[in-house]
Amino acid sequence: CSGSPLIHVNLPKRNICLVLPYSAPAPRLHVPESVLRMFKEQEEQEAPPDESEKHGGRLRTFPHERGNWATHVYMPYVAEEDFQGLLQALLCCARTYVPSLSPLPEFHISLSQVVVLRYHWIAPFVQSLKERLRSVSRFICRADQVKVYTNQTKTRTFLGLEVSSGYSKLSELVSEVDKVMEEFSLATFYKDPSFHLSLAWGLGDLSEALGGQRLQELQETVDGFEDSSSFLRIPGTEVRCKSGNKFFSFPLR
Ligand code: AMP
Image (cartoon, rainbow, N blue to C red; front, side, top):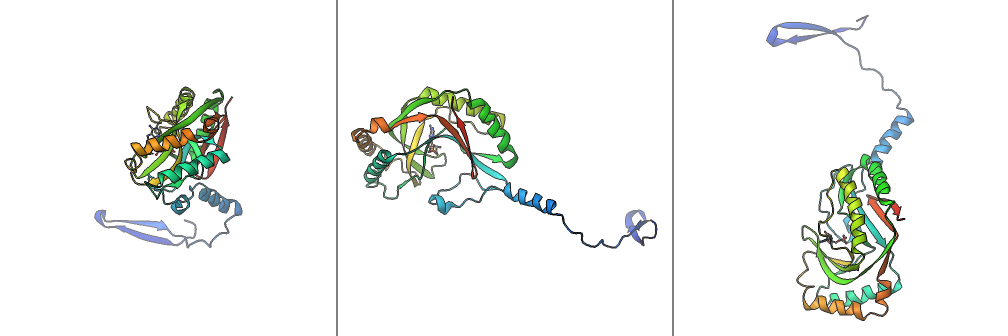
């Protein structure tokens, strides 16, 4: 205790008195840049906040927590002019029954549920997807059957085009993606998936409002749309994974 003042601590129950060395508080040290940068990296690990106004008030089905990254695996579809024309025709028809229906900003065929990854799992998760998907060969599928979907909590409804060909190749992709999900103890995809391109969405369960005769009418719009059989052929050349605001691409063989 060379020279430091001593403090006395009384432990009442046992009637013991300890004598401990006491040091005056040290002056505040300068924090090196490298240490300050460590905290910047920690901020980076925080998933971006859910700005629901940017996606039209759609609700998360799980609460946002620090360090949780919403992650989704899918096959992208690049919409050309003709497809946008068909989308407008379908919206025009569907809005006579559900005026609140909004077009989606981008199109894809989901190959996974939206799962939650911790930041440090993103890199190994992506690596595992890369290894499993690289041996799957390219293919073509067709999405031309109008169908209405709701999410599991029935808080959103989607007007979509279900695939009528390419089901086995899409199932092959899902089986690879599911293996990765299992490796990370995450939810696998639907056991009986209905592969589709979602085109538009609305809040709540709108399946009755868009069902029956109305669905038939929407199907006739697709069948009668010029050239739809050609632009609804979807090239399966790439799988993507979105985790928070990060995108990863996996080209197929
Ligand atoms: P997506 O456009 O892929 O996000 O799908 C729209 C919604 O369809 C999601 O909320 C899914 O949960 C829902 N969905 C309902 N049933 C199925 C199914 N059998 N296969 C795939 N997606 C489904």
